[in-house]
Image (cartoon, rainbow, N blue to C red; front, side):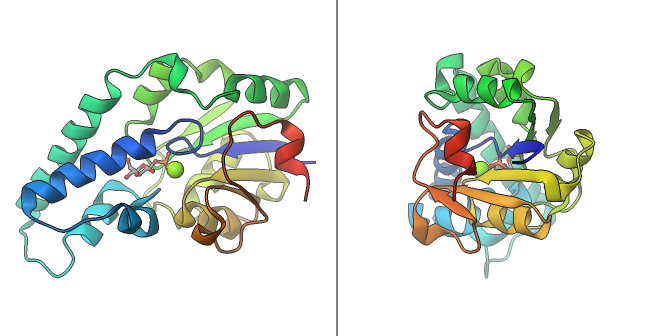
Length: 213
Ligand code: B16
Ligand code: MG
């Protein structure tokens, strides 16, 4: 049984991954760049802002100034979407799951690549359920690098080998495994490689659902 469970935010605890997709799609449409949901899931899901844009504009010539402007524009689109979020946008049963985990003496953290993590956590009013939050300001190397999960484990004073990570992105599962943790993937089986367990959704899950093989 793990000593700590480290959750990704966007796409795991809440469906903000859909808002990220819509914001990137808006930017891609502005720029006349073809962009599909399938590409989003394979290449952008869970990946930081700059790396995501680099995938989107691959093979096209843009100046650093234009790149900065596009990152800001995507972030404006995303912020307009999360501005209206309310606490009921937590995954169904999510608060019960977090309470159960903590009642079992297991620590909890968030490991999100997002610089908007704090805003989303505030909108959802879930800060009291976490012992630590690692976000897009915490480390330099984003997912699939293990740094964010290692940093989160450090916040919990827990060795990575005693942690379990929960992720909806292929890049996130890679990060968790590189950090030496057990990995639970949330989403379609085809999306992931190397996860220890795959659940189609986190809706109404119990602690035992995350632990069993
Ligand atoms: P921002 P997570 C990730 O959050 C998102 O999944 C990804 O779509 C986004 O590009 C990244 O954060 C950076 O977010 O532009 O808000 O800084 O899944 O790691 O919680
Ligand atoms: Mg995610």
